[in-house]
Amino acid sequence: MVAVTIYLGLAVAGLVYAYFQMFYRKLRPGEPPLAPGHFLWGNGKQFTEHAVNFLSETRKNIGDVFTVRFLNQYWTMMLDVHSYERFAREKNFDFDAIQEQVNQNVFGYKLVDARKMISEAGQKVNGKHLYSSLENFAKNLKRSLVETANTDSDELITTSSSTTINNNNNSKDALSSLKNEKGLYDRVHEDALSQTPVSDINGLLNSQKLLEKPPIQTQPKLNDGWCEENLRDLASKAFFAPLFYTIFGRGEPGKEGNFHPQAFHKNFDKFHKYFNFLWLGVPIKFFPKAGEAAGILAQQPKGLDMMNREDCSEYIKLATDFMLRHDQSERDIVCHNLVFLHVNYNTFRAVFWCMYKLMEDVKVMAAVRREVEEVVEAKRAGDDPEADFTAEDVNNLPVVDSFLKEVLRWTSGVFMVRKCLEDTAFTTSSGQTYNIRKGDKVAIYPPVLHHDPEIYESPYEFKYDRFIGAEFFKNGQKIKHPLIAFGSRCPGQKLSMLQIKWFIINFVNSFKFELEEGEKTVPNTSMYGHEILPPTNDVRCRFKEREGACELKFVNNYGQSEGRGLHGISSGNLL
Ligand code: HEM
Image (cartoon, rainbow, N blue to C red; front, side, top):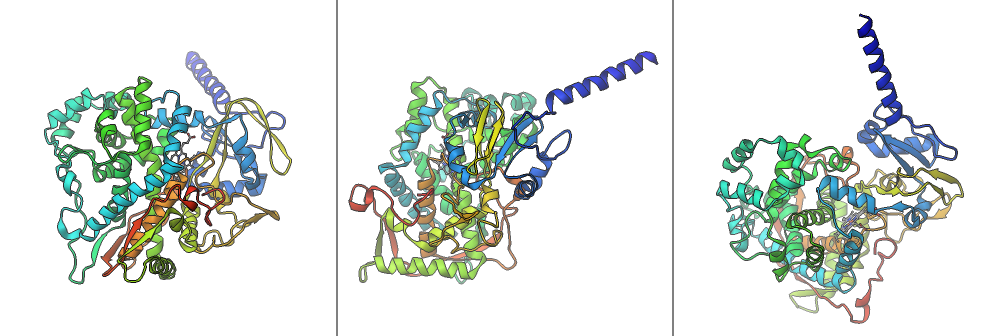
């Protein structure tokens, strides 16, 4: 009995010690206040319930700068919109560690000389490459819109090169190729694999569940020419497919295997769902579905084969070449391709929301349609069946521009997060200094600023014209960067904004589309942390090709008069 009491006493003392070692923090002088939370898990639950409400409420009670705790990780939130530039410029607030954490924890690899590679590759989507990337995207989009219009042909997602989608029906070959290639399934997350008996993997592959052709959800055309579909599937084939082909190019017909936008999209979604948990370091073995999806996503062409594709993007070519020169493995290249898809996936999600918001409110659709029709008419000389657009034309449409910014304001869910490299005294724009502890995370949280009623009138209302000619103020001072959905470092912001705008113009020009009766969705606020929030549920919609629609052509005018830069209404932090 005495022994039991002693053991119990020791166990309790051990737990108390562990608690103080791991979770408890005594504030040092000048450090920001701690947000009240659970004594064990800290603020994780409040954050996942509704991050914006939790942080806005805490800000009201303890001020713009405070520290929250996720288990044993401390994050200082800087919620002063005027301190954005100081934050972005502070040398001790490091982004590389964050980028490494994403690569390591989510995608399971390490990028050698990452800073150099990202900065060189980033140039491949800017300057003259911005124009050529958009030109390639426009060509792929044109093709996908024709296929979308031709929707009852049953070959919608299996045209030309894709007729062999998932034709790798020999499950033994598939399994051995997974092993030989050292793909994600068995190497990125060895943990996950070691937990999955090989017999199970065999079973999975033999049942061919992983290798099935994705189902075609589009219903045949109804009598009056309308097609019904889930919005996600429609956005996937109309937008994600051309995006995918713009990034990776099209392989030789018959050799594509599983590397097909629709198969990829479906599985990427399953994997991506667990992004926040993986990022924070929860092992993938806790999410077997994510591990399964990763196995399929790992089935990609070899790096050199991809580079040899004529229409593969300059970004992927440079990145692959860089990685090969730094002796990185095929597996690392596969993982990097997934990271690149991950960043581009944000563009897809934004497009989903644009389509939804157009259909949800007839006033929004009418305003955007009016602007598109007017500009198409103006660009079309006489009876010319074609209208030419430059990047500046695409950029300079006030309604489309404001509508897209409002979509981003409304759905952006991301942190601008940095790791503090040294103990740092950080002074905010209002002159107050806070001591930030070395090793802590420090973050601006754009969604809180995007929903601040002192900056945006009725922030929970969707106002498509909110940004037209608008300026925003807080505490009487003009805000330089009111919309920070891309953080300060995203090299892809110009490209993705232009891709989305060009898509909106084309889709509105070519199609009528509307929600089916009673269909509704909202951003999933339990997924705060994702760059663009996913919807809580998909919706059914119908679409129909517009008769006599004018053909739109993107013209790459880089180097000609105005084509050297984009000085349109979207200047500021976005363009
Ligand atoms: C709607 C679309 C997109 C959104 C909302 C978005 C958002 C973001 C955000 C918030 C960051 C972190 C920046 C920071 O903390 O300062 C980021 C980083 C990054 N984004 Fe994007 N992004 C989008 C599209 C793209 C595209 C199309 C590319 C392709 C080039 C891209 C490439 C990157 C890269 C490479 C980084 C890491 C930069 C670094 O390590 O310095 N993004 N993005």
